[in-house]
View 1 (tube, one colour):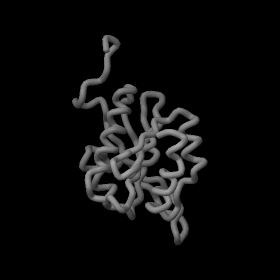
View 2 (cartoon, helix red, strand yellow; view 1 turned 120 degrees about the horizontal axis):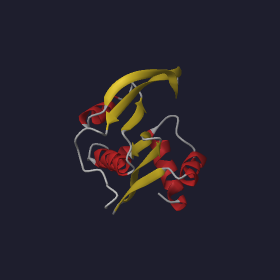
View 3 (cartoon, rainbow, N blue to C red; view 1 turned 120 degrees about the vertical axis):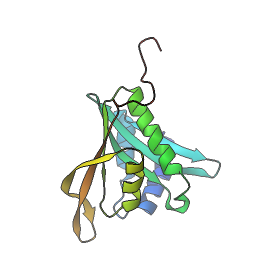
Amino acid sequence: MRQADVAAVAAIEARAYAFPWTPGIFRDCLDTGYQCWVADTTDGLQGYGVLSIGADEAQLLNLCVDPAVHRRGLGRRLLRRMVDLARWHMADRIFLEVRPSNPGAQALYASEGFLPIGRRPRYYPASDGREDAIVMALDLTAPGPRRPSSAD
């Protein structure tokens, strides 16, 4: 993701969520140096992911696919890219939060090995107040793709 992508990313975010991130949040993520990636297809930008990495841990802050192209595998490809980036940066775990009202996202994360480890009460804004978040984690120290070594 580049600063020039922020308007398109924010437009997807607004189509996907009732309480979207602002363009300023995406700009701040880029300025902070987070791993911000887009899925730019022949049909244009269709999804994105934002990952923070530090202290041997990664946090998937946002993963979104344009609702017009759901159920085509793009979310899974983006998620796998974020996990690969966390591994590349030698994180031991990757965490994320997901809404209980989003069973599709929960199923995607579970199918990729994420396990629920807790809840954050009243984490998300919701039309009727606040909604809890399910916290999920993936252990990246388990056997999987090779982690980079100093020889690489």
